[in-house]
Image (cartoon, rainbow, N blue to C red; front, side, top):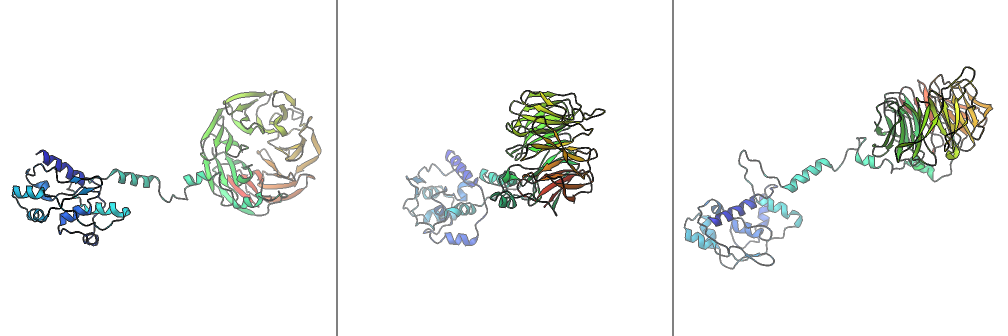
Length: 510
């Protein structure tokens, strides 16, 4: 009885191997010719002798417990199982006929079979399939078949990691990993050349529709080899990154804010985005992962954010408050505060070197726009001047000239004024850019990389291009049917611009 239990466990172990199917008749005939013993059981045992336990006939498993103790059935050697040279005709004949004689069975069972000739060589890649196919598992009704752990892991890995991921999904892993590694072929052609003079766009290249509210700002990535990426901030509580050079696809949608996104900009490295929202927070977001790395509560609605040009880890926030805060993103603390008797800050502009900066406010007195533009010392937080602009108009946006020591201010007087970026920051009364309408909208203005062209949106939906040196209008582009809030000129492509409007539409022109 003890040996019967040992044999039963041996047979059960062999039957529990994973089954992949059955071998067809051609494969059985291909494996059979090399056998010397004309026995079905012997051939099966010999064919798998090097890797599998020899299966027992059905009489061993189902017959009475009369097998006895046959410890010498298998004789092990250092390399493989070897069989004795005793003939096996009696053993096969008696048990194939179902002999019930105990002595005959015991004596036949104790015989050691001769070593047969080498079976046909089975390739390693198909040996497992052939061996498993030779074993047929009979599953009784109501019994769930056994599935090996290897097969379960293989099936689960195929579901989690398909061989061919869908390229139509915007957030696929392959696309995320290539967001900052791909270089647009259209931009790459200009990287090895000398910068060309800026030109005027004449035709529509593509139209981007993805926002459900007014797009307050559109900005190209300042890093040259990543300048095909276009950032947009909208009142629909999202900001997005687009491929604005070739495909026009929306590469990623960021939902870090619970309120309207009023301002957004790239960090100098091009790998993070700085945004300010009406939910009182300023957020630094990783471009590839879409996860916010820093989220700061300003306790007021944020209307403008700007990083320090020489210390990108420090940035300024202004909005519906009389205070402008300087945050350090490493410690998440306010390092400086700039206090003024104003209601809200509309825009912030760092001057060259980052030692001074200009803030634009909505503070207008009866006879003059006192404290409309204020110059600040960044280190000491002291006011350098608050009598820069003496007219009764607010200035919704500011822009720094890339070559000269000047900056421009968009005014609600339907013109753009020019100021010196050196103390005492005087306004140039001989040059102003007129012809567009502002009418209370936060119309943005932008200068080309060489500083020769000044572009501005308009409340009429058109985009206007001026010669910066003589203030002459060069071209008017009928871009949108609703107010055009921003015109952003490409830092590498000389005749490419992006425009956005109050209806949530973005267009690329060249």
